[in-house]
Length: 225
Ligand SMILES: Cc1cc2nc3c(=O)[nH]c(=O)nc-3n(C[C@H](O)[C@H](O)[C@H](O)COP(=O)(O)O)c2cc1C
Image 1 (tube, rainbow, N blue to C red):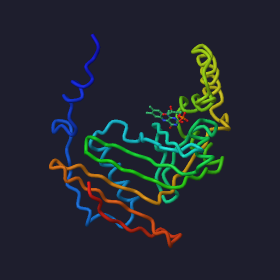
Image 2: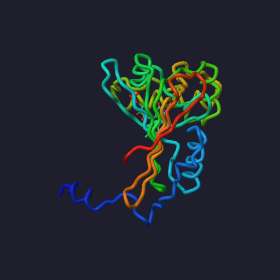
Image 3: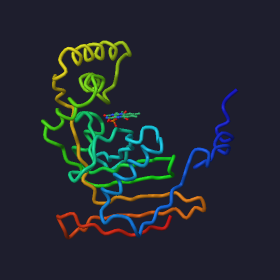
């Protein structure tokens, strides 16, 4: 017997009070810039027990402008932007080379919160990518050394062989460079914070960087939910 997807879908709900606490959010008291609010919401997601709050959707567009999306890890968020790492020769790496612009989405259901970030993406200097990788686990290095991300895989055995060699190298020489592993920084020109509300009066606070300023000058406004 097949699963009745529709029945399952109608049995599920969003923000079950047993699992979710929807905090009050006063946008009038929000900081003038998005980074401190992101940092605060991130810490609150961690404190509330949100599993894997540092995973995010990364949307890119191909050379024709067609969209694509996948999950990656957040490596940092600071004055230089929101950072993530991947292979320059992966599908998304090709997209970013052709169109250096992306969008991120975080969803932290235990607090009914979503954050969306959009902006141009720059490649960090290779030395920073190396330092970022060195600071991570042997598994991260092994995965970076396995390489060929997004190429067609001829057989599972081929992956096992390449991965075993990469794990061996990662353990023996933890400073081995992974040349195509690249650190990217998205410098937002727009960041939106969404706080869910039980009466569906969700709060959406959008920050936009002033186009007339190269300095960090932000304006913010509310959006209809
Ligand atoms: C929880 C999770 C975290 C991931 N983190 C990364 C990451 O940080 N970097 C990365 O290249 N791929 C990561 N992936 C794999 C990507 O989702 C994707 O499969 C891969 O990068 C190839 O994407 P592409 O073909 O669009 O380039 C992660 C996947 C999951 C499920």
